[in-house]
Length: 95
Image (spheres, rainbow, N blue to C red):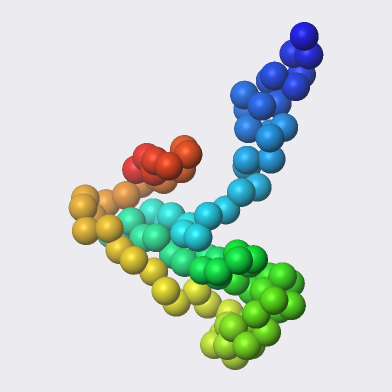
């Protein structure tokens, strides 16, 4: 029994799950909950603005750089307009 490995997995450190990012990054603001597109749609699913995107998708990377390095594609959740915090757990986002 290795308690350190079990605790690392329990605290989401040993499985490297903390470093995983899906296609959307969820952002809570004063007046909305937004899902901002942060990665490419196709494989390899490179994070927008990363070195991998620069190598795999040079034209998309150049568009991102020339556009001021801002993520522009986002979708607003039309529910409760006031979101204080977002926590992503597996397939669920707790707001």
